[in-house]
Image (cartoon, rainbow, N blue to C red; front, side):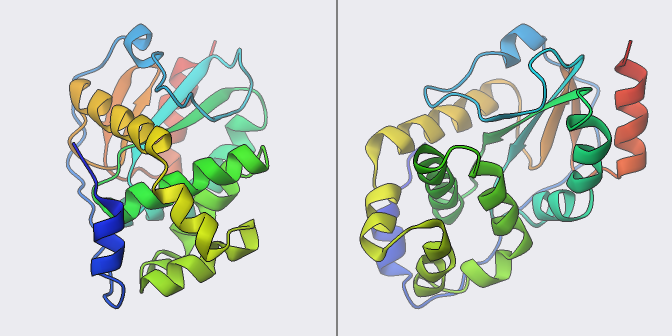
Length: 210
């Protein structure tokens, strides 16, 4: 997999973005948690207690509307009820469906490197405002300025070969694990594809708690 971000952004500077996303029915095929524990070269950004009995790994794309719906409508409840109470350890893994999503993940990684703890805040803002930052490159640059980015640091970040290689690794690893739609969740290895309500997610989690 390869994203030519420079070409993508320079060529689409005046264009709107069509958000991509796919959702399908839940599948029974699960993955060994030991396989899921392998992190990308960039490492995982983790929310929740290290010893939480339930680990949720979400493969997401920043331009996926189904991913945005989960984070806008469900994630806050999940965090309050399970992550902040030490029951769930939550991880997003990058699975960008196109160059704009890869760039957003790159910027979240750069922001986290500069200000530890800001990764999920920026991810949440991206999901909540998908139609804003995907409107144009200028809108994208302006959107991340409150996180300390200038136009120069914006391009430096999305063109960072180390970060891009790590995101590509995460995507390729997801494909190896059978990810072919976003969002795809692995809940202690149990696969769940597509959007999920808090009530359904809660039932799965409660069934895994000691």
